[in-house]
Image (cartoon, rainbow, N blue to C red; front, side, top):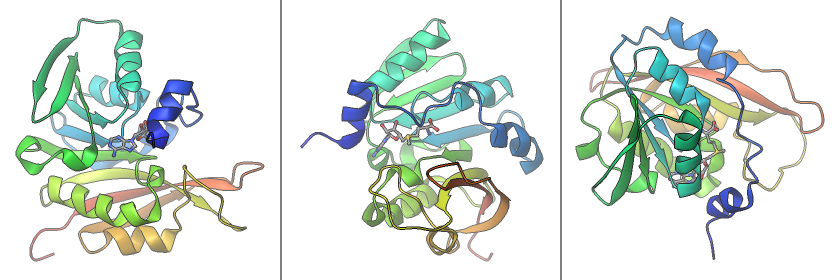
Length: 213
Ligand SMILES: C[S@@+](CC[C@H](N)C(=O)[O-])C[C@H]1O[C@@H](n2cnc3c(N)ncnc32)[C@H](O)[C@@H]1O
């Protein structure tokens, strides 16, 4: 069976995509204390404008995305020269200071992550079904060095029955359960519920714990 996300990109069902950098990124990132020049990992990145925003704010960006259409659309929209190469089973495209690794996040390993010093997750965890979220939180922790900071935007649903995802809503308690073993996490903002769906974006700051934290 074709992966749900590959089908969505092929059919253009990408309602999650925003036409501009996320307001929470613009508001909170400058307050996180990530130094300019630090490379930012963006798992399950889609063709998000957030990567260009980070790039413009002096961060080299490493995005990982399963769907080749997302990568190609991002590059087309950027309109600048692209260099392409292969490494560790990924096709990598670099445009300006954004490099996109096309492939499965779970196949991206620490050997490739050496320079990463921060991360940004908007709608990555919530793209995954419950059984895969634990694996995601653990895998992310393996790629991020102690002390590294990140901004995490999840989707919560105030009340009501479970809707079939993706996107899946992930309650606050689950976010804490998944990440607290490896990260210090702080809830920064609870977004307003969307009319109709009741979805709310929650914004969290995270710091990767070290061995004695
Ligand atoms: C909800 S979208 C969010 C995209 C982006 N972060 C944004 O804010 O627009 C989730 C993305 O994850 C990608 N994806 C799903 N599973 C993946 C995996 N195992 N490895 C890499 N990308 C994946 C999908 O193709 C999709 O583009």
